Image 1: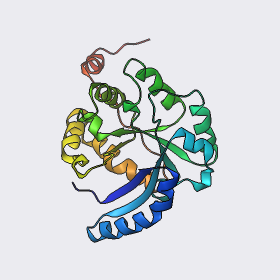
Image 2 (image 1 turned 90 degrees about the horizontal axis):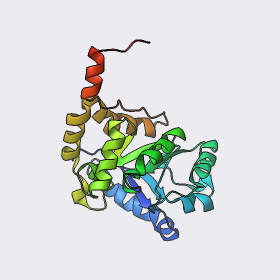
Image 3 (image 1 turned 180 degrees about the vertical axis):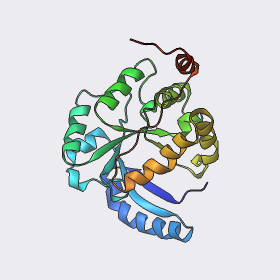
Image 4 (image 1 turned 135 degrees about the horizontal axis):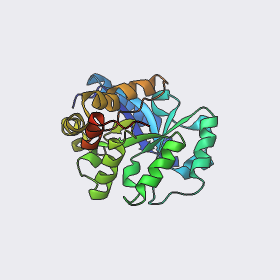
Length: 218
């Protein structure tokens, strides 16, 4: 699949924490023999954030970026306050697959709140391929069309989840090669280097082209 670096973002739990280091060392050694660098990481729920000290969190590749998901189909009112406190502590929250967590009629408002609060957004490649149903696919393209996405991840629970050629083809065809590289290569490199993630360019539709020919003047 052309992968050179792989983040092992297990879902956090006390049992996971007990086993993580030994499993990471074992799998990391095997990955290294295959030419893949294994990176540490963990996927946290909001409850985990509320109960853990920031310095104990396993960040993505040792960076200041930390991955979280909602684990439920609603957004608790305290979510943004909690994430703001993490940012004050120097961490940068990245939300995993928000397109899978909120229904399409509520998604535009939720997306606006994420952007307003400076939360980085990661979309699942499987959402673009329809692996999680119509709602997730619709939400994913809603984000990407508006340029509201920073990273794309395979979220691979099985080896057949690494369908890089398929989703890269979709990204290039719909958003251009520059945006595809930004989401799959440039921003991941920026993340690991503790640099700010760049926003992708929104998709230009037929109406944008129309306005270029007939600009409005105030």
